[in-house]
Figure (cartoon, rainbow, N blue to C red):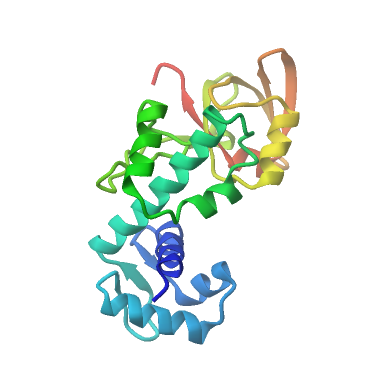
Length: 220
């Protein structure tokens, strides 16, 4: 069984897992753009390897071994992204596709060296936590910008949408991780939010944009 294929499935299961740690096979099929019979066949193989709990017509759930393997793939991906930004000068909107290729390199020493050169970063360029060498993830509790109140001052910590288009949009607005944002007004009709930051007296973002900007209250 192709290790690259296995890693892609494990990573997708990890990212799609709901609060119960479960993933609907149909959702997995749509996410990977792979036909259901092929996905079901793959789930059986992953079950045989001990990576998933699998029963026909029921949601799939990663085992502890599967979670660790998936987290280690994600670790390689996120380390690569931060390396590309910090050491090679790529923009945060440019790194995902490259990291998708590099994450399948098998050499642990390669990523250990990358981690060392970066000073053991805890987060990738999009604010997502980087799993440690044991596959453990340090989770932080942030809230969405559209959950903030008028007058509240927050720090931009991460994005939930790391697509190239969204990141380019934020670039145009000169909005980067670590930026201090003050909520100036909220429109009840469409939940758009007026904010102030850096040299911007004010900027209004749609409800959709605000849902994808994760922040932390100053002084929390």
